[in-house]
Image (tube, rainbow, N blue to C red; front, side, top):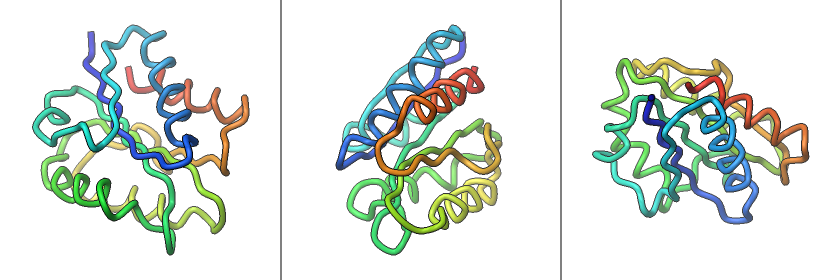
Length: 141
């Protein structure tokens, strides 16, 4: 059984809802899932997972959240080579530039993206958005 780690940051609950749906999909496909907020996660723990799903909304000028998530990802980034990774998050405005940048950084680190372009949902995920998250969870396994 693959060990799947889902680590996220959420202020409004939108990205948290996405994380829960990703976990549902992965569990339904038979994964052993650990889900946690980034404040409770360590890079060491993340690296023990076979597959990682990382969730962070677009913040500021389409960037990762700077207080907790960016420092965590910056520490993790250099150790992602060969690791299967999925990226997801919600946004309120813009074109999804933060996700394209984040996917690029992840690929440059040598990670294998489970979904090439990441998964983004505008504001609160509707049923279609939640189903896309569950499908991403199933792809992790």
